[in-house]
Image (cartoon, rainbow, N blue to C red; front, top):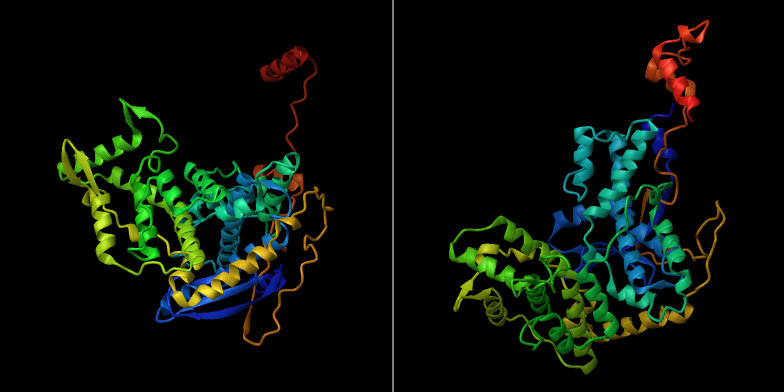
Length: 494
């Protein structure tokens, strides 16, 4: 029986090339897969050694490498509806998270040290391990299936839908339904690509598919309609951009506004009414009355924070549209202006109740910095005047390299053992400024599966008997035990 070190040698690995990029601003950090150049970059943030150390780990490379193999293997290669393309974007991120978790799982199996999960987003797995709910060392098939089910369903449940990319959905998805008869088969194919991880087909363990939230539907709609900022502001009831603050401040303001507006706390019930009021009105009145009593309400606070999470993607989309508009016009966006930003926040958190304006900010305790996100690379490039030309060229190159005319619409039925490489050229760079890291190869059999046990051996382990017990010998029916007679009568009645 090979020991842990020998197993590590047998585990499939891949040599991943990456490039280190030193940034002067922490608006992007850690490893990131650049789909346009088919390259993995590591953004090293100056002065943040601890952050860099945490982000510079094997499992983070495994995460981005999984996203690369997903794309190379064609998750968007065949026709999908816009909504399905959005779900594929979600599956892409979820499966990359799963690959990261499986890499940590392998570290645990080598060292039996549960601290490998500390500070990771996989607390659900660490807790199940601690309580004995799962045992990754077990050779029992049932225990294995239970663990695999937890990995896929637990990762999906902790995933934030706002990480999905509405731009990808509208770019790769079809609007006209020209190949609608292929959509479902192509969608299942993309899921198979995503969830074939470490030699396990996790689609077999997923108890339900991902769902697109109402907010995400609005996000997709914004991309489909190619709305101007003024149109988006009217549709989503958010402030229009007046160039009186930075793009980062505007995005934060939009996200908080969306979180305060109707429809972001109460699921998909934004259009319902309660005694003549919209749900959003009821929400605002509730927090105003609590504020007047000076009694913080944890439930209201949690509702607000949930709204912040759900609104992140749409706020980013609206801000990106602003950046594109200003870039196209060739005019500068606003710079950081705390006075204008704070004034807008004061107005946002002032709720009218019984003829009075009530400040509710202290009641819902909007520690919004925990739930906001940095503006996108594209928006940041527009914010930084000296990056305009670079961004314009990058957007042009992206559109040229991902022409929709190249999308294939035929169904592919790969052979059982066929390698899904689609003839993708090697990504190993020739430049000497690239570095390399050998990590677990999630396209191979990283996860050790339980061996099929002999039925007799299984019976021996469970009962201590090598053969099943024999029924007592009887000479005639009347001598048989009552249980046997009952069984015979039931059999005759069938």
